[in-house]
Length: 496
Image 1 (spheres, rainbow, N blue to C red):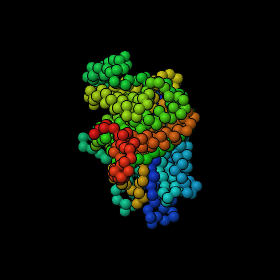
Image 2: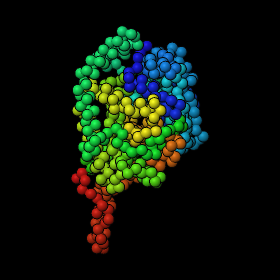
Image 3: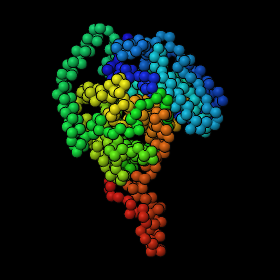
Image 4: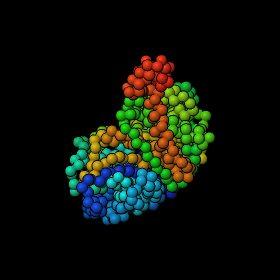
């Protein structure tokens, strides 16, 4: 048996009927031009015929009851895994639209996983318009985080459109890296050894951790310090109790558009993502007459996994930043977000890598305690919304000759946080996945539309007009003596 780490085990501890702790990935493929009518049925048969199940797909909980999940969480290999249960074939009424796909994924993501089995499901969905199909995979967060999930699915795919007879996701084994350690066994000596190592590490890192927590306390008392702290955000419609049913929406951008804006504003790509989300949330809450006077805050997972680490456990830290939703002026809002993220990064960078897991547990402990105690959604939130940006593969990828068109993350939500926004880059695009509570956030799909309009607005403010428009404006001015084009007056000098 393999014991779970503390952070992985925490996702099992907070699992409930209303807050299932699984994450998902939606991949949309275009069928090969010469694909036969039975392409998907044949592909599914080949996938199910592969009986070699690799970790973590073959793991199930050693003790599936509540006490087993909370007190003695550990994995064991399921030697009788039922692929007919875990791998399922669905169809949309042809031609299935993006909206109908979103409705189906929302329903599939609402269903909890069976804790008596390995904690994953894979759904092949045919009937999508324009000769496409989708693959929706979900796995419990105790088994995988966003970065490792993307790397896991990336290893399944190929850069070669001509490759066939490929392994299914559950048969692709992690790559062994030089010097990597094997998983710790769930034995008493191993537990004692790890406990002693943890105590030594905590003793060594205690001064750094105390210093980090002191900085948070100081910033909570002195907001002008610029470091956004836990509980700094207001209570909003996003921060009440949630139910088990989910909504899912998507938005798709060319990555180059966002990079142009980030360069023009001297900001990072993450700053622009936060700006788009904050601007969309401000408009969404204004329409509902529920915009707080103080800015909403975002909890932002930060990857601390080494680039060559192919493991699948949770290895993230966390930072909190302001979304400046109280600021009406778009450019001032962006500047406030940039300042907040810069201060949060400086705070995190003062900690050594070995201390980041302990720091994350300290920072997230109020959030986890809220959920375990039933106080989540009944008191001030630790932060208002979770926003993640996960880097994905840069190359175009294929499975059995089918071209991967887009990948969308489908995340989890919990009491006190009815919305999760996760972005995933792939082959020159940035794909937003909005996961929300069906009952707490009606019309959540508007947020996807509003982020698109927020990008249009920001481009008009910080980027010069297209050369053709500028030439036409100059021609008009020279030929008629017309007044200066309004668009030129609105273009600021930010980033130039």
